[in-house]
Image (tube, rainbow, N blue to C red; front, side, top):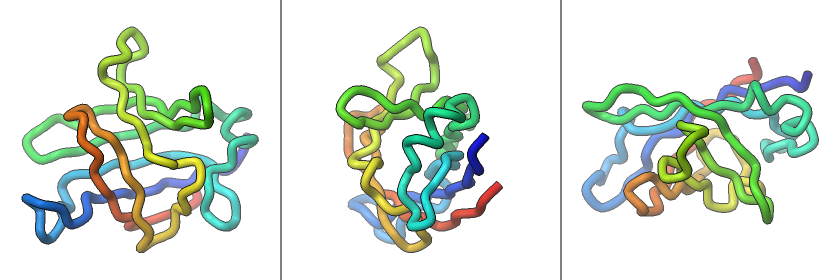
Length: 123
């Protein structure tokens, strides 16, 4: 099985959150290449270990899976019986998960939000 990295994302500055929000984000568990890009081949070998935990103020933490879909699309699925809860990563397949970089996620409110990579630790 491939080495999985723990990635912490926190909401970056945006309207309504001029300082960002340390209490709104994601814990991702994914295999990464040496340069911090999702390792697709390793993902295929270790899908069951690729997961997400979403945290937000005043909400219970939600757990799900990170899935790789058609056209190279990546998304977070919290309930395998419903597609309406899925959140899509924007170009996650080409983003670098290294501290200080930014990634975007279309959350369940339908809006694209930017998150800063805070931590990457190989598990």
